Image (tube, rainbow, N blue to C red):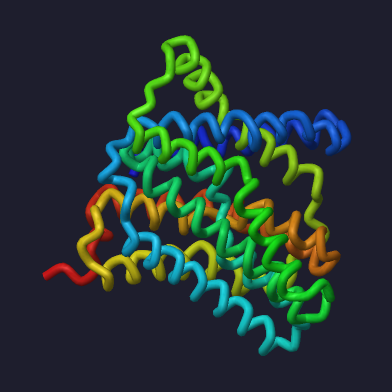
Length: 320
C-alpha cells in the first residue's frame, strides 16, 4: 500500500498545489485560458499521438473492450439519471446528475495516472475509453436536453452538432491520426519526435495543476444531498460495473481491464460543470460534485489501485 500511495500521491499533490495557488494568488479564472488551450489542444493530443502511433496495429482493434466499457458507463449514467428523476428532479438537472455519476476525469487525470501505474502498454485502452466515453457523453447531453425541450433545432441539427463536437475534439482527432500513423507505419523525424515527447511530458503536470486552480476558484458553499448517491455511483459503482462488464465479455487483456477500471474510478470530470454552465442547470451543485468526488477519490483511487496491483481484485471476476 505504501508503494501505491507513493505512486499516486504526486498526482493529487499537483491538484493540491493548484488548489493552494488558486486560493493564495487571487487571480481571475480567465487566467487559466491559455494553459487550458495548451493542455487541450497541444500537450494531451501530442501524448495520445505519440503513444498510439508507436503501437502495433493488431493491438488497436478491440470491439468487445469498447462495447464493455461504454455499456458499463452508459448503465451508470442511466442509473444516476433514474435516481434523480425519482427524486423529482427535472430531466435537465437529472441529466447533469447522471453525467456527474458516470463522466470521469479521464482527460486530465487518466493518461498520466494510468501510464505511471500500469506502464506504456496502457496507452491503447486509455485512448479507446477516452474516445468512446466522451462520444457517449457528447451524444447524451444534447440529446437529453433536446428531449427536455431545451432545443428546438430538429433531429438533423442535433445530429450535426454532436458529430462536429465529436470529430473536432482535439483528443479524438489526435487518437484518429495516431491510429492512422500506426497503420501506415509512419515514423516522424527525430526532432519532431523529441518535440512531441516534450509536449507529452507537460500534459499531466499542467492538467492537474490547472484542475486544482479551477476547483479553488469555484468555492463549495454547501454539499448537495444528491452527492450521497453521486459519490458512490462515480467512485464505487462505475469501476465495479466496468470490471463486471469486461469479465462477462471475457478474453480481454488483464492490463486493459486494470486500465479501464482505474479510469472508471476517477472523480467527476470538470466537463460536467462546463455542460451544466452551457445549459444553465444545476451549475453550482455540478461544481460541488467535481470538488467532493476529487477529494474523496484520493482514498478510493488509491484503494482500487492497490487492490488491482496486489491481485486482491482479479482482472477476471469470473475466473475459476
